[in-house]
Amino acid sequence: MSEPTVNEKLDDSMILFPKATILRIAREKYPGLQINKDAQTALQHSATLYLNYIYSLARMTASSHNRKTINLDDIYEALESNGLDALDLKESTREQLENYDLAERLKKKKAEEENSVETKE
Image (tube, rainbow, N blue to C red; front, side):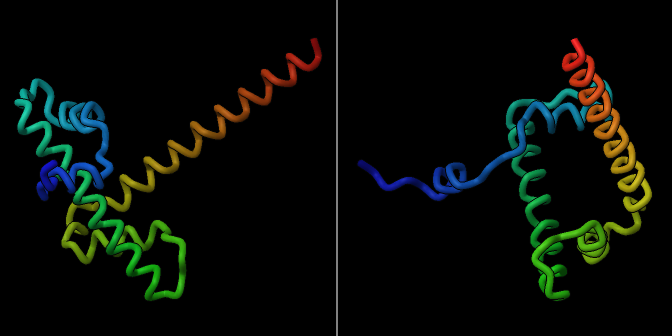
């Protein structure tokens, strides 16, 4: 049996984002975009690597503040240290988080209401 190559080792150890998710995001931003198979794989790998990089920077920020948990400010600081503060991601991220929280609260409330109706029956 032959020794696995470096690429095989990387593929086995790396947890990638789902390709369909990455492509959906790309196509939402650029409708009608055609991406060949090799470019799809490259997008998938680069998105995963980039998020891992931002996570590592945020983790270092949290550690420098003697915390084990990463918070949103650590992510912002990681983006700023990477030169992405010019994209003004803070406001859009906060809005998306608020929308997500609201949707989760509504989903929880709906589930509680359904459970109470089932219990009464």
